[in-house]
Image (cartoon, rainbow, N blue to C red; front, side):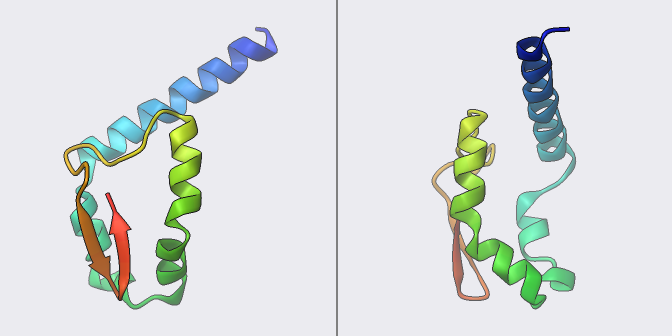
Length: 81
């Protein structure tokens, strides 16, 4: 397999995992899970959402399916879905 074919397969696999995660998990349940909401690492991840969004945009993903344009506030951090 060529390097370009391997890269394409990798991206295809990641997109499949994203689709599966969105089908199996509810983003609102995750974002509001009491187990995470007060965890400092979780809060820091929320603050890094623009970095993650930029990375997912490279894969053609700019929002969470079914939540385009929605905003939620978790521990004072606005999260664009």
